[in-house]
Image 1 (tube, rainbow, N blue to C red):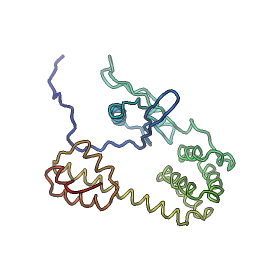
Image 2: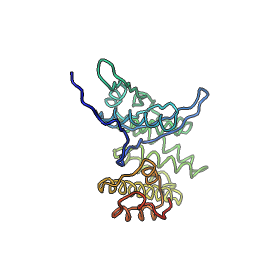
Image 3: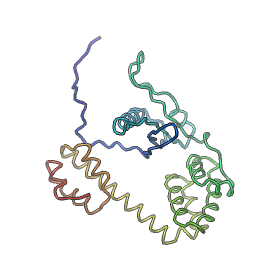
Image 4: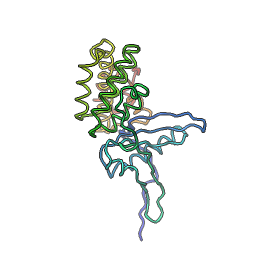
Length: 264
């Protein structure tokens, strides 16, 4: 056995991209916890280390017990994610990661319009988890009929569900079917509200992309930023402010030079 000394400073000075898909604070009768939701489409040997980082960071930041929920659209990935991941020597692992997993076998196939109408969020999740399964078509057809009825009474909520479903289907054949169903069966999809929702989604995506560009640029230029600086950039949704920060990041030597006299 041999040992070599390492730095005791574990501070991260580089702007690392560490983003969980969804983070929710849950309040229950038994207390609070933070739910971190990750979508996983394939087994990845590097992901357990990232998940452990997410949970440790959330626990240190919020002081609330974290729970990791991994959503998998296929059975092979779900079986992989459901295993226990030990981090540390085999004789004495210091950390044990045990995700809560949702896969195709954990949710029912909801293919009845009446059943879909009773619980639209559950139907959306069912469609997302079965999007690669033969049952996807039946679920989406049932959901489309349920949303058509909902849009007559609450167009805004129906629009939100439509956009969520499209996002949950990813780049799959089921997504093509969903867009076809919306164009044919739901006049809502061409409505002003739907167009506004899609425009807002595109704007948010552009802002997020610009924020990532700033972080990458500062990293490549060797400009150190704090975690608060990174959060400030990532959370800014103002395209004009982000554009100003990006321009300054091209020549800035410190984070202060990027933020000088700027708001966001």
